[in-house]
Length: 142
Image (cartoon, rainbow, N blue to C red; front, side):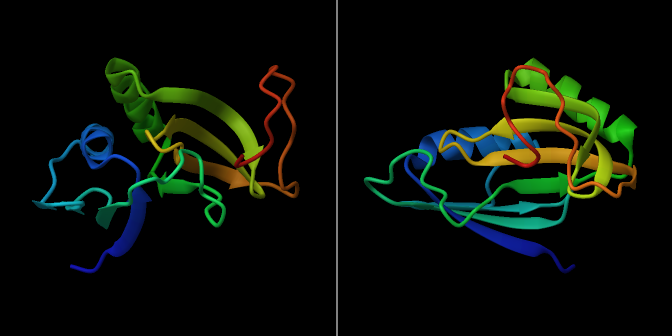
């Protein structure tokens, strides 16, 4: 089985393990001092966490956001319900236009402020994003 690997520096390994265990509904495959990895089946992903002392939260200068593309809106709704039960939902967007696509999505944020979107593409869009005046002051993928 092939899968994408994502390696993240984290400021607190225990917090990160707790968050990603909840988000992906699985426990780490390996935990060592300052290190953990997850062999996630759905979606296929090798997630590696490396604790780095002194990393300030929100220091993701080269990372825009992370995401999991889901098959349909039903899967997005299931994710919304699960994340709401776990207290992880940051923002829900329905019928939003972002990245030249109409999408349904839910955002969660890791303990180190890494933004994650679980989304499905509903249709293509000629616009990169359409600003919705919801008071959030945020634009697409930010």
